[in-house]
Length: 175
Image 1 (tube, rainbow, N blue to C red):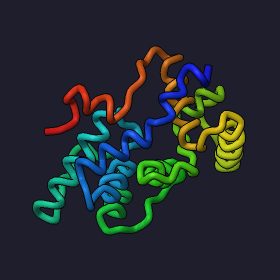
Image 2 (cartoon, rainbow, N blue to C red):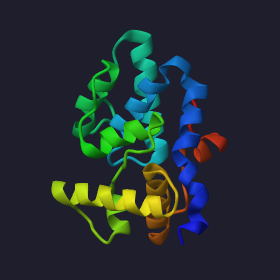
Image 3 (tube, helix red, strand yellow):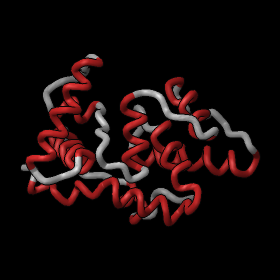
Image 4 (cartoon, helix red, strand yellow):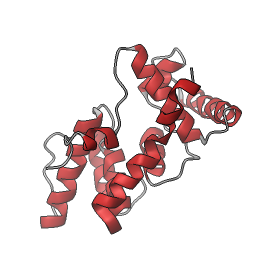
């Protein structure tokens, strides 16, 4: 099954290239905004929200909180002021988007891949270790392997593969 989805392991590398092309010197800032606004957001919605905040902040030094969930607000502020992001998933996602493929982003889709809906902090750490071991077995970086299992889990629920790069190619991301 993993081999069939191996190309999806390039999810983060493709996203990073797209962000660098679009945001240049602000690529890391945008990665952090994208991670900060990612919880409970679909891929295209996540991008549009991060892009709106980025543009508003760059133009005026302020941004509208419209569309932000309470869990997003502190991390958006952290991103805009160059502070570390909080939360295991969000911090790891930012690192992955910035190009660090040794971190593991674990969200609801990864939980579901392993037959779980929620995990404790201890179980989260154990799942990180398991993903690292499995990635090594397939000669992949942990984030590449995670991107593959994320895609597999979503496909089990009837969702087609989705990525920022794929949506951008269809013209749905940029305003």
